[in-house]
Image (tube, rainbow, N blue to C red):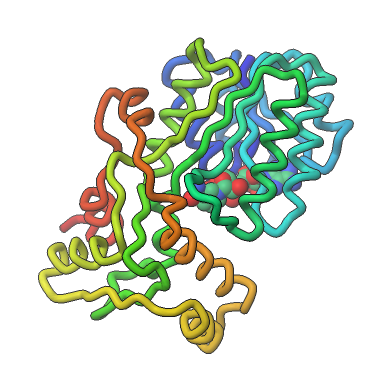
Length: 287
Ligand SMILES: NC(=O)c1ccc[n+]([C@@H]2O[C@H](COP(=O)([O-])OP(=O)(O)OC[C@H]3O[C@@H](n4cnc5c(N)ncnc54)[C@H](OP(=O)(O)O)[C@@H]3O)[C@@H](O)[C@H]2O)c1
């Protein structure tokens, strides 16, 4: 039995969608905190189990009879380490053999607030737990672009504090398919994989592609962090959120998200979604 946590969220749900194409529903379990959000999974025969990452006893109960767990990392600003430790300890107590953890890509010493330190702590805890582990260093989702540049085609410019830094964006459904392939194959004991798109793109590249698709000029203007944050706050975004967004620009400048790896391409047997494909289907549907 494979159990996927965060099953009512994006990555968890998409991973179950992929698992269902190769694996009988009777061998798939979903961990959710609100079962009313998982009616479609119940209808498809998935074994839906309820527990919050903070509720140790409920987690132990939910993990009974499970061989592999995909721990979809908890959201930022929510004491991720305590939640992840609970999941790891409960998995061990319930007799789970193998735990996969969705960390984030990092290939420099840059510390992304609210993310890097809790990822490092979780990975160290998992490695010391005695469980078989697989760590997935997930690239930055293409879907996250909407938070950084907006969900509509920009009028004339993109302002973001990323300098010429690049990101090896990966579409979340591609990540989910790669993750499902790892969960259903062997040879991943005590391994770490970096799951990215096959090309890294700067925000200048994004502006250039948008210009081509829109048929009008859209330019990229890099910004310092402080004016970017001030501009977002003036537009009504809470300061903590504006700061967090700006830190992704700083992360890009430090190259933390830039490395490209062919693991997703090998697992999918095709090239992962490119920038042009993503922008075209997301920002110009039906064009
Ligand atoms: N690589 C990237 O670009 C990137 C971007 C954003 C986030 N992330 C990380 O990757 C994770 C998955 O991404 P996503 O897009 O699938 O996020 P998402 O849609 O927000 O899903 C997060 C899932 O975690 C569940 N969850 C949160 N706290 C929980 C708790 N205390 N107990 C049990 N379940 C809990 C949520 O349950 P509910 O449905 O009940 O809310 C939801 O199902 C995120 O949680 C975050 O750590 C990565």
